[in-house]
Length: 146
Image (cartoon, rainbow, N blue to C red; front, side):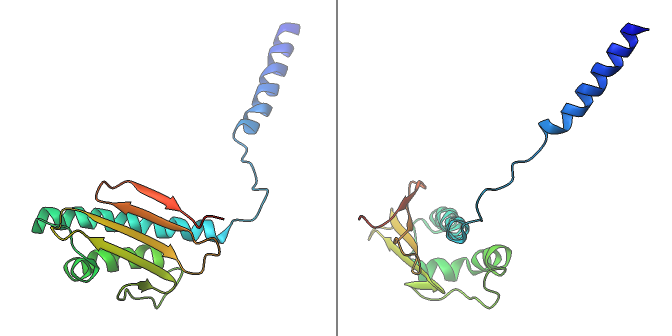
């Protein structure tokens, strides 16, 4: 009988500790809006990289922004609906440099169309943060030197 009580007591103790294993840490600081916005901008850089690869496959070369947007307007507008409309419901892609309100794009394509360099920056960011990428698909972050 004593063994049964000890076993039941241990079982209850273990069951009481199980929820602690799944407890979530509460954030100690408020979410940083600039970090969230950087994530959204990163998503657009990834999309541009992907669409540039599609452009290379379909047309044999990378394309500058006006041609890229003309060829893949549905892709860009789909991204806009899924991601950016929650932030800015009336936003539309525009010409470079400011392709979206507060977003500055530099997209330079080599003369032979075999390479490109892109930089997408938040013009409202105080530290001059930008995402940079090229035909390798590797995305780097940058900011002003102090």
